[in-house]
Image (tube, rainbow over the protein chains, first blue to last red):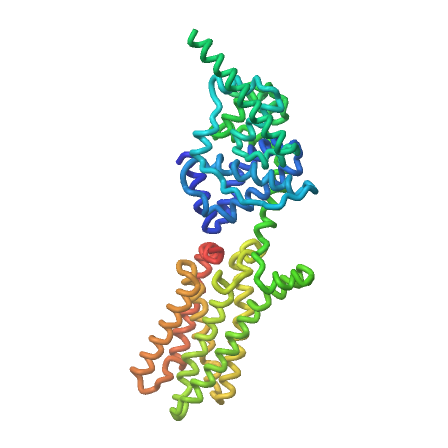
Length: 182
Length: 271
């Protein structure tokens, strides 16, 4: 049995209220999720809180997993949004609405978020501020609002940075392909 | 790209060069082995304490409407929780009282003369005990089910404690009805049958749901005792010495099965 299908099996059992299955899923995935969440926010306490909220959410909503794709990617989708929520609650600045975002499907993640080849090196060469915003928007599929909460910068700044990142990448890739053609 | 352990540790600490960092980020979306290797770099004590917190968060049962209202009115949380849980505890008593009323009604309608009039009492008394056992646990009657699962005293021991807490209610009711009917020694003739039925219900619960087990045992008991009574000149034959011996053997067998399959009962309780 592959890891992926055993993860799916675990989720199916969690949906029926199997606590051991949740424990197994936690053992399997909590480590990398914790490290990665901490990379996103830089604060161990917030990362731990987000990780906790993630697995509580999994316990409550395992049944909503559509049964296809990569469970790890699904977990990350939940985790990074829990992190945004944790940050939102922590900040005194109150945001009026809190719309629930359904976790994006796993295959979407696999298809949309791959950075490879020339794109990867172009992204790596971006200014750190731009790169960070670009990765949050594309790799983690966060909205402008979520990025603004996660990074503590105004939404307008997120939008300009995103636009600048895209312009720079386009230019870089354009010249790269032209260079290849020449 | 292959990621070295050194690079992975650098990624964790945010010290990796941008190109490799972006590559690791991308690989983490798809690469299960890399996730495992990165996971091994997470601090185990933090993972343990988060897991404990997850357990605590899950164990909070969804508050009932009474608890929510009480909470909104400013009642402290433990008191509100108790208020929310008490109806469940009193439900077992309500079953008992309801059973008593029902028994009295049925029995007062029975106009048979002599000892034979105790048949319906002896038929119904063990059923009350079975009902009490069925009400003692199970998701359907119990909003504290999640607590039950997570309690340090989980599983069979907790179940048996709860049965012990509820069954005496039914037994006292039965004895009371017996004395009210002036049933004499027949006031005690239901005890072994009740024990056999209760143990059989628990033994069946290792494979079936509580409800189904209780229904099967109850129906089986009524049908068999009823047929024995109908087939004999003495309709209480099932409750005399030989009958009691049979019930004692059945109780012993059911008890033995319960001990052998207690592990499965534990799983059943958690269902």
